[in-house]
Length: 240
Image (tube, rainbow, N blue to C red):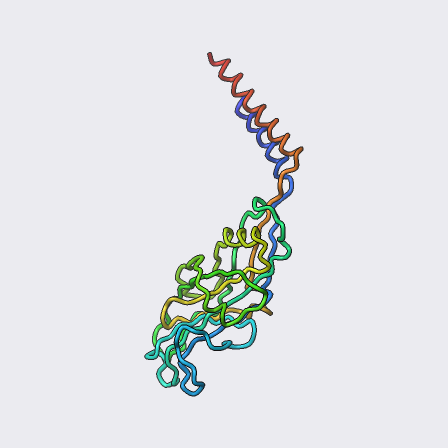
């Protein structure tokens, strides 16, 4: 019986502290796009680690990696396409670090395919890099190297989630206005296509905030724990 009473006291105290539930805020990209570094003889560009141009209209999610032998008659040499997106952090300015419970970056994959003339499609592996953004994506952002995470192999459409809690918490704590993320594929011949980042609403950053307990809640918790301790003490006394 004493264990039941102790549990009830503890549960009541914790309920007072957790009265206000965690809040999940979904942030959409403020800007996004894909950029490519490729050998295009007709355009005069070369594959040299410097990204030359946008790959598709704003919001395009195109994460690809190919070598010359995999293009066949396309007349293209080596190519890499990276996806970059930025999220505004203005709503979190001045947020106490302990309130940010988690930050999850969601990549919505529409297709995993190959751009070659044939052959099996290999699973993709996405490497995520992060940077301090300025609200506008550019080719320079596609060249940033600051690895945050690596996905498991991606073989089919679906959502891929990355834990970016520590990175986002640090950006907020240092007053950054935007969080920037860059996605690159590390597997040759894998081609990941996602829903448009600026129109689909599916590419997103999910931030979970928890309330800071009010002083009264802290007192309730302390009182509840004190009661539990007292009951445990009495129980030990009875057993002597």
